[in-house]
Image (cartoon, rainbow over all chains, first blue to last red; front, side, top):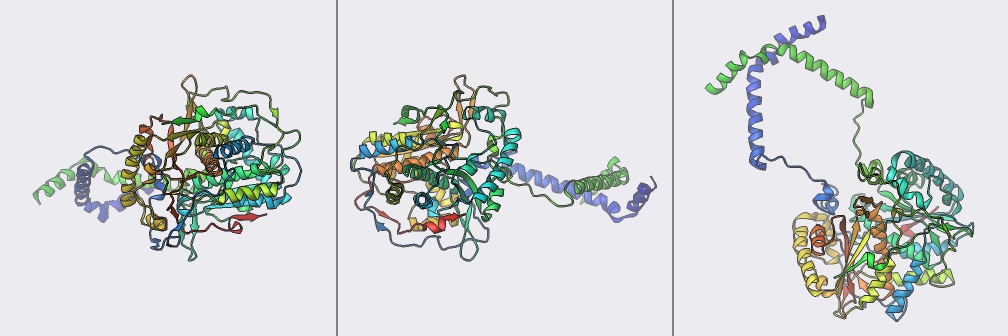
Length: 298
Length: 298
């Protein structure tokens, strides 16, 4: 213990030890002051910090995105509002018939996992994406990017990435309850539809935007907005006779983002294979809730 | 300084001071061990802990909902899959025409903040909600409740709750950037549309479900699923010639949930006034992004 003794000898003669009897009381008094001030502020009660989502829904948009980045110019131009005549383009002049016909169209949609090799006219899918782009969004930020992949090689790479992650998901990450609940859907980590479907749409939410000067632009409620746009896309695809499947490949976002060369502000929300159902396509034998179970009238 | 001198004298004779020369080297050695172990683990780099959502998207569904609550029976019945013929009900036999017509319908939708007093046939709105209920959802859990309010008194109470919170939101909670970005939309805490619109739809996401035995049922991706259903609802309303507005009243969820007597597993996602645009209705003079700006082809 020669080394330790050396250190002891060193500190014995040092300034810190000789001054300790002065430093210590100062520390004690400082602690007392902090303790009493704290008690004065919170009445002695330990305040449990609530999780942000419990405190205030939408809290993520309450703070400034950049502390130094406040821009007094709104993202949209401030212009006079213009007259709007209400809905003038709809499905049928008789609103009952229109609502019923629309219901029949979307009720014909099922999640399809087996696709035919029949090619899809890309211009149709483009028009459907155009329709999805009419979605409302927080402060009209339009925080979405639709990546339409029809290249065979890129589809194969996407399948590779997704299947590798999904194997880990099914074996390790997902709860026993989750894999159990998925059993009736007969899904596993093998995702043939990613190469069988003629095209894939990867929908990214833009968590923030960038202004011309490179500063960040807040994208309010970007996940809800992009999901609503996804709902509109599903209706558009069905209206055009196309089948699709909404998938949320767990933990594949960053790798797919890199593959498609998308910027860091974009996060994968959903991935949709799009095409025509295979001739021998089957779907789970499930029912939808009757409207009385989802609608409460006041 | 008699008090301080007293304390000094007290500590001069105390055990902690006389043992200090032994304690100090031990602390130094302990710190060194911790430092070296840390360096060994992380290669000397300070690892910044990623936010849960960055670590693994969908992480919230990875754990069991109840530690003791695993149910070996899937929520859905395990049945043989049934054949599916693909989309057979669509908008037009010519898919180009169908896609284009659907685009024209939804592109006619604008967020409306001034409603006419013209009443709405509730059965039409019901059919639109029925259409929204065809939305896909994680493991077919259908995690949504649509509350349709046409009662004048309840609408007035909803307006009261929302305006009280929105006043605080605009004055205190929302960032300066947020209220600035909203200026071109000319919104403030006064929400006339909540009493002017003939009906309001409050859409709740069910964060979990309840089985017959009272145990919890996991609702995978309930926010995304309910938002997609909202997108389908918007299309249905527009198809039937109705106008609406998607609002996310910040921090009003719990009070509105209580008012409507909804259970704790339901959280307000969006509130939509629904009706016909007022004759003098105006909307912000804004454009939507061209399709090239939202679509990337691979």
